[in-house]
Image 1 (tube, rainbow, N blue to C red):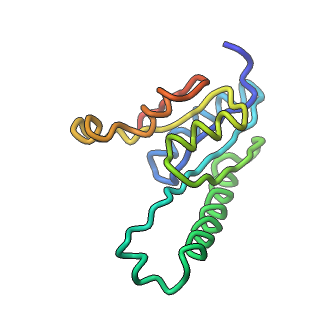
Image 2 (tube, rainbow, N blue to C red):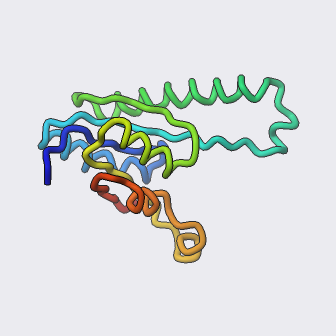
Length: 145
């Protein structure tokens, strides 16, 4: 395996996604790597909600992005203190954005937790982790939640 200088770690702030933190910390410490911590906001607001919004869609998305940014920065301070960390809030389809951020930030590895949903859900929808594994250009460590 080549040198690992940048490890991309994903989070949706769930307890499951936190399972990826410890392996990422260990890898970053052992390799002297920096961590790129990524959160992806899905770009979807149900039509029913849009109808009753007091603010414009643009304003709502701006507030969502600012909130996600604050959450991600707090998450990094709490769980990745002492490491070199960049944070990225992306907007779009999670697996697409994760792979794109990994590519654009020259990640040498992706660490992602999987929710481990049931067979039917997995068979019909697949999982974000599985889609990242199929599309990523670098190794992916999948941590079971």
